[in-house]
Image (cartoon, rainbow, N blue to C red; front, side, top):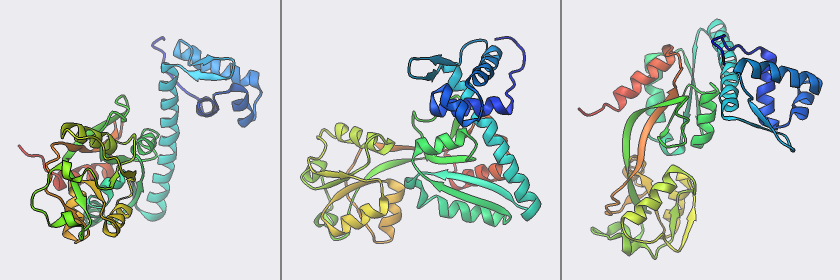
Length: 307
């Protein structure tokens, strides 16, 4: 690739995004209302700028190369930036306000979001805050595409390190919990082996919390419970534990939150492992405008670092 600046026209951006979705040049051309030769020519123009192929042609369609994935991400960023700018201009002109879009995991929404939103609006009443709750990989995709300004959740290998960076907030121990009327709730001393015949509510497979629970059982020298269901729905899990003599595990901050409200009981079990570090994640190229800077400063005050 030469030192010539890499520039994508709007039709190039649309071509890359649709081609990534369809993985088929012919279908992409149809969606863009252009001929396939015209789509091929436009793709060739982009690849000449890049200096090598962005997609590998196969018998069934196309697959992006590593460079292609990078350029596609760049195209999505450009689209997200343009959409964000339009929304910002509209908010400022029509309502004299600024936008802040926060992505948050369900495991952080109960104890972080209410305090964070309250603090932000106390400091800047003109903020228009939108909170999106979801799974980490979905939220990170939206962050990279500039559909979100930040994501608050547990740091993991899911974050694309080329585009996203995280700032540590706190670590959270695993707490074993049960309903308030469970027979185990009154015990002063419990070994994990005592609980293994109970019905458990475990985190969903493929999540950070699910991985940490597997590590916990291994560290404690026990096998995964033979009777279990999987759920990441905190309120549903609490209702089930208060209806049945079941056991589950919550991050420490959530467990403390609901125990102080008389909804669950934290059992005296040393789990020897954390659910992971809670972080606020932003794009590496993010412009620290007033709303995002205010959010970062507020989180720093909410979660001061020791030392």
